[in-house]
Amino acid sequence: QAYEKALQCCPRYAEAHNNTGVLLKSMNKLPEAIDAYRTCLQVNPNFQLAAQNLSLALSDLGTVVKAQGRLDEAIMYYQQALYYNARSPEAMYNLGVAYVEKGCPEKASICYELTTQLNPRCAEAYNNLGVIYKDVDNLPRALSCYETALKLKPTFPEALNNLGVIFTMMCCPEDALSYFNAALQVQPTYA
Image (cartoon, rainbow, N blue to C red; front, top):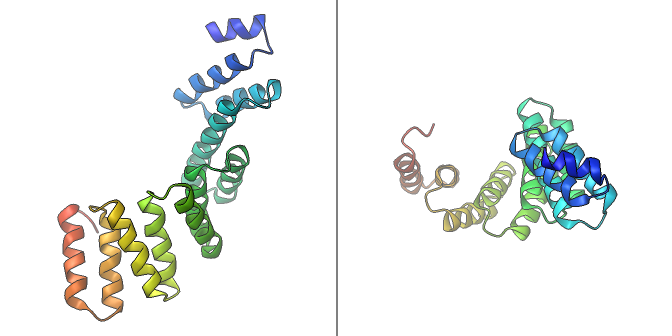
């Protein structure tokens, strides 16, 4: 209510629009939060915090619609998120995931590579990049990606399992079994 009063008094008060967006996002009202951030940026196009907040909200909305199977719409939201914050590893990573689900591994691999540049500690991006390399039989690159993922996150069951798959493909059953067992040790319900 305080933000509403501030906006009634001073509709060009950018910070109140941004704070309204923050509040709405915390209430999981993403479309309304996005509107508030956009209004803030119309009032003050140089308000970097609002641009970052808008990017996060757009990325979150992309994730919501992707879960509903609306991949093209999700991709659009992730691209918009990157427009407002081109250095968002979350939006870049999520765009890569959406491209994989859409059957565009080349675009996804670019997104994952960029994610690792934006956030070199993103084990998930290395793991997903490894899957793409494995799928095109570039086993050395896949192996390197999975090993990097495990250096960053030693108990990452997907990367452990994927190393088991790579060693199976390389006809190294003892190594493969070791990684499969490690994945199950970390997560006994891993399927």
